Length: 198
Image (cartoon, rainbow, N blue to C red; front, top):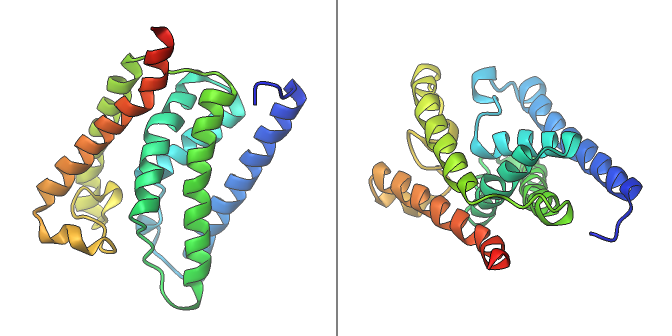
């Protein structure tokens, strides 16, 4: 996308921003006002929700910090979510829920790569540990909130119910496996920039 004009980049960013914002806003409004889901269960506190905020902020501001967040946890978290989809809705609404789920997570991957390669916001090596530490810190902070609200944001209390095979293992194994996967995947995503520096 390096050949795109400034105006083309701006139009592309605005279209993505509006599309993602409408997709997410409509879904949360539907679950709250139509389904009647209590607010505590409908908060945007999963990792991919935080990545959506980074996606929107990155598209709106062009800041490197948001591009790094969209690239590392945004891409890795979204790819894991696509491989192991956790769509809990049933009945007539399920096709809509699945469409929204995959649109959001594919957008996270796309925008992460767009900001990093299309806008040339190449991350530094230290961004890996900085963002990884932020994710671990967030998991620690959200756990007491989960206990208080009887929720399971970021799956710190139990693995997604939809991913049944993981429940054969203790929860600490799930947390450890996900943590190791994130760190390893961050390292793999950084390899193109490591090779470029050499």
